Image (cartoon, rainbow, N blue to C red; front, side, top):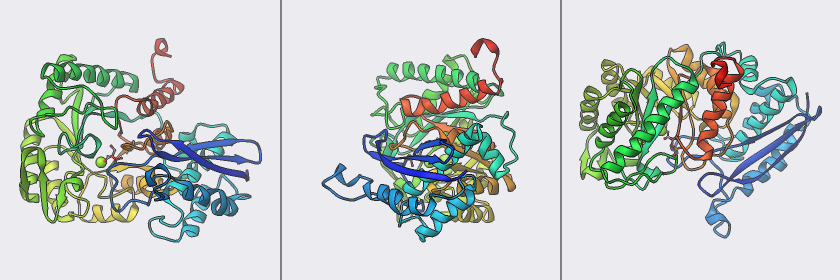
Amino acid sequence: MKIKNIHAYEILASGGYPTIECRVELNDGSVGVASVPYGVSAGIHEAIVLLDHDASRWDGHGMSQAISNINDKIATALVGQDASAQRQIDQIMINLDGTPNKAELGGNAILAVSVAVARASAESAGIELYQYLIDTFQTGFNPKELPRPMTVVIEGGKHADHTTDLQEYCLTATRDSTVSENVRMIMETYHQLASVLKENNFSVNVGNEGAFAPSGIPSNEAPLVYMLEAIKRAGYVAGQDISISLDAAASEFYELGTYNLKLENRSLTAGELISYYETWLKKYPIVTIEDMLAEDDWDNWSKLKIIAYGHHTDLIGDDLTVTNVERLQKAIDLQAISAILIKLNQVGTISETIDCCLLAKKHGLMTVTSHRGGGETNDTTMIDVAVAVGSRYIKVGPTRGERVSKYNRLMAIERALGLVPPRYN
Ligand code: 2PG
Ligand code: MG
């Protein structure tokens, strides 16, 4: 089925600045609409989010240039093309851009079109997006093995005015159960965490990702204690039903070989930071750790990987690997990670995202598909991708519409697959 029309425009993202939504129409009348997210603590190796940098509009955060790139250059190149040839569609845009990081047309422009084309094709074929991706890319995954929630419940770093140096503390479902039961278990614990924080005189206001962002936290370790207490109060067993995941987003507190923990007034070498983390791995049921070191500190990643392995903890690359096959291959060669975070907008096309997941699978690495910080939308493509590539977890904040839309999509897929008891349908 051929592409008839492509049209993009600005919509609001979760942080109150614009992002791109794109509408693709095919000759048979099928329509695909997609909007793209962006991050607050984006890695330097990510595909470029093309902004106008025109101070008279949106403080420079407008995306009108990226949108013109879609409506003029990309539309000219793609109208009339076969929409079901997703790889070819993505390759045409990659060639048209001509830069290694999509700086010319904008990763935000290219991804909006890439996803909208996939959505239109799925619509035309009369199948769900995840199934369309499984079929198109022959991912070989069984959609009945659905991902589990990894839910950010306390946020700091750049997402919350640096209340903690680490960016995210997550509750992660580690019991074999349905998605809807896992979501219930995690959210019950999240509400218990509110009580624990209040009893300790912290506010339960939420940050960028809908997680608590309490100021005045005494140390980077304290959230772990509150989370354990919340798991217990909710009636679950830490380490069995629910475990803990951390994302330090360490590039944000790294400078010239030193890691500066402002909250604790300490500057550490990578070796000291690794020892600091190891005390936590010994004490708490931490199932995954992410970006605990800076995005180019490769040798120290390999050292931390050995330690994490010894504690049965998966080490996830995010800013390190940016959903990019070349960086993932380097991480595999250096044995720097055991898992990779997947974010479509880090690389900028559906095809490249799925290729990265397939490379991870080939080498036995786990994938975790993730939301973005301050620039999310209600688009739920990340969930269909997670299902299509067999991600173990989805990382998403617990509240705010743009976050709950992701859990609701995953639960809808579960219902459609008939995987929940009828009384919940
Ligand atoms: C991360 C993400 C999402 P951001 O570091 O994993 O939680 O943050 O989108 O701001 O880069
Ligand atoms: Mg991260």
